[in-house]
Length: 245
Image 1 (spheres, rainbow, N blue to C red):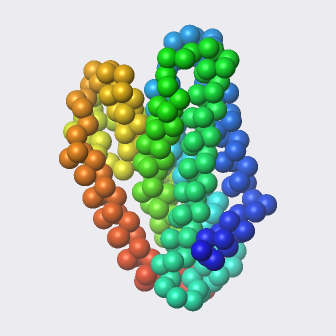
Image 2: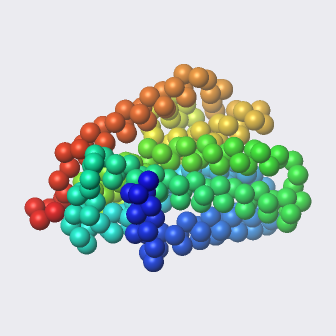
């Protein structure tokens, strides 16, 4: 808990707090305006857009967080009492907590605007909240993966990978993702939340997908756990990116 508190303290006076407020607000305003103008945009499109953009956002946020450690050659990050894996866990948890509030803020803002401004009462508010939870759960391996890329390589590598993940996530929203999306963590946010909405409103054909079963969910959980374990084992032997770290 002390390490987690320290992570939140280190992020003060950086762009990391403002970006978690600005991005949900701007996304909500833009999509509400688009819905008002086109009268065709659905909440599922908003969810898909947020899920597809998650890899790039995770890359930028993780790069900004890791940059806080690079100025001191990672000494404050690596030289901790107790198990060193706690440092990575605290950094990951702090970013995920911010991501949770950002995602839930985005869907709540869109849901409230959809009801108050556009007068659409068709979607229960609980659906907005549950879709937000699905989006956030899909981000869990993404943030840890981009922390690994920024610690091991550089922000340029992380950003390049995130752009590829964005394209894959967008492609896997089509029929190309059928039977494959559960093996690609970058598609979990967009595809998972979209399938939840599709099943909720009986629109599975729109995604070219059958109902998500327990096997798909179990596959995601198993792969996510394996990915996390591998990264934490790697971090146990991590000594920095440069000789003077």
